[in-house]
Amino acid sequence: MPRTSELGVLAARRAAIRAAPAGSVAVVDETALLATSAVAAHAGEALRSGRTAWRALPGDVALLAGAGDDEDAVRRLVAGWAGEDEPALARRARAVLRDELGAALRPEMWSLVLEHRRAGHHVVVTGHAPRPVLAPIAEDLEADELIATEVAVGEGTLTGEVEGPVLFDGRGGRKAAALGGRAVAFAYAGPGAEALLAAAEHPLVVSATPRDGEHPVLPVAPRGGTLATPGDVLRTAGFYGALASAAGTAAAVGLARRSRRHMIDLTCSVTGDLGLALAGIDVEVTGAEHLWSARPCVFVFNHQSKIDVALLMKLLRGGFTGVAKAEAASIPLWGAMFKLAGVAFVDRGNTRQAKEALEPAVRKLRDEGWSLAIAPEGTRSPTPRLGRFKKGAFHIAMQAGVPMVPIVIHDAGEVMWRGHQTLRGGTVHVDVLPPIDTADWTVGTLTEHVEDVRSRFVAVLEGAT
Image (cartoon, rainbow, N blue to C red; front, side, top):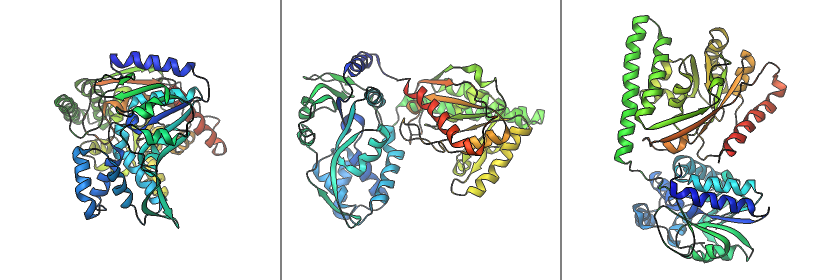
């Protein structure tokens, strides 16, 4: 959540954005967007996968140790791509965003870019990292343009060479030059990019550390990193301790009552309340009445964090099961609980297996009055951008003849970052939307219903910043 020192700067910047005419140019540099080095993230991925050349090893190890980006680091990274095809590299860049860089995206900047898009501004993402590295980030931001270090391609494969200049210089002069002299209304960059910032009418330095200078500063919270604070460790221990205690107590009660359902419902209630409280996570809910008014139903929710499961436990209390990817069955503690709760484990690459795995859940929904919770994105999204919705949840609701209830979760990725195992204190906001009647849905109209429900999520998510 924004600190008090951020709020005034953010409010002033939003007012300036709304006052600027449509078509105004807003330049957002990677040093403002990310709390870590995109080049270092890709160099680390190459090192872990064994693709780093011996001659590049000393420089990349120094880079990962915190030596900082430089032009040589960019060239080493590109040299390691020699012989690769562009689609394979694009898939890997998307994976690095999913596994590492997504957690380093600054939410303050995400919300400001969204404000620019609402105002009809021309959003330009700039960076010294190679284009393939920044392309998935620019895509998720829905930026209009990307200016980055270009890579050479010959006969469908990368040559391992940079094409043109590496857009790396301490003052941001090369990036400013790449803008071609156009009028820039807004610019965002990390400390030191004076030339890039000076090109804009409304410059803003984005920094996690206090500093003085000629340009106004947006003080942002630190992000990313691999080391948890002692407070994070204590919060996480408290959460999992509550989960284990709840499971043990519920097991005893369930055995005494000979009711697995009662055991699972009790585990959900205790974990959702006590576990999140010990983790320092508050949950504010709007539309809570819709959690109960239409059961049995299919609950659909946007998925950004592992903590979403605990949030659903708190919100739904009991009387529901879920659908999860097959790999979730092997997660320590959670996997065993999922199996006890009758969660359907789906192999996303096997359509026939997926349908068979869902049949027991559909029967519980239709015949036993259980509700079903599904993330229609199919996986956690690496950025705040809502992913595409798959049709599985919609087929189930239609076939079972039950309503669909959207649960829109805000800020879950801020209390448990993607790729991290520790919890941070904070507040998660949840909007539960009114139930959607599925009585008139047909296979032929299902696509438009999927888009309609997704558009409701987008409207709430984007209207909240």
